Each structure stands twice: as structure tokens, then as C-alpha cells.
Image (tube, rainbow, N blue to C red; front, top):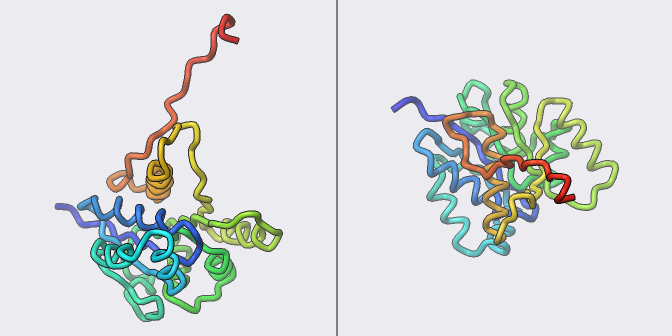
Length: 201
């Protein structure tokens, strides 16, 4: 088998923990992918409250390597360690701001910063609403230095039938934003629709 793609998944304490779980599940299903997982202390609480007590141990089982968020000397803290990109899902405003302005006080933010300096893809599923000007400026700054801001918005045109379908579509879309064809996720895509005939208007 060819060399596996290392992908870092960071889960911060914002609401939407189920999306981070589904991303890890999807990546772990692919034998070409090795998930490096970083979960913030706040995310541990959110995972338990939103997904359930079994979410955290399940994530530890699925990950190729589980990194302590305080371990700034971990392998993924260095640009010399080969990975193919990183997803932060969900991404809190605190984490967004720390990434945008270089406040590298934990491994999650340091690993994200490494992706930017190495010109690798960094996908941030920023979860907050409504947004004030400071939030928007942090998103602009993160975008200007190379991050992809991808708010976890449902694709209602796909007519999802359950919350699980919404979560899965968002997770697959985030994975596909890494731009790696051999670990792309089978997200449903808009196929287009024929224009209405004059009689249908």
C-alpha cells in the first residue's frame, strides 16, 4: 500500500462537536489516512454534553495518534513532520483568533500555524452566530494568511432527512476541502436541475 496521508483534526470547545466526531470517523474509514487528533479541554466537555459520554473514548480509539493539547513539543508542532493538512471542527472564536493573530499557546493552535507556514491547507469550521466586527476581522486575517474559513452550514438543497445527514454532509465537505483525491469523502453534490419549461412557470 502507498504511504498514508497524515491529517490533523483539531476539536475545540465550540458547539457542533458531532461534526468533529464525524470527520474523524470518515477519515478513519479510509486506509490511506492517518488521523492525528488534538482535543482541547473545553472540547472534552462539549463532546460529553452534545454527543455523549462515549464520544471521547471512541475518538481516542479511532485516531492513529492522539496528542495532548498541552504538548507543544509533539511531532505535529514541527513543519518537518509530514502531514497533508488540518481541519479544526468545530472552530471556536477563541481558536480562530489565536490562529489568526499567532497566539500559539497550545498544540492545537501551534499545529494550525504550522500548516499555514508550510503552505498546507487549513480548514476552519468556525461556529458562532451572530458575528460582530471583531469576529469578522479575525476571519479576514485568517483568510489572508492562508486558512480556509468554512462555517458548518447545512446544504438544504440536498433535502436532508435527519440531523445525522446534515452532520455527515458538512463533515464530508470539510474533508474534500483538503484537496486530496484519494481521501475525499462521498459528500452528496448538487447535480443541477433542468430549467423549467414555460408551461411550468
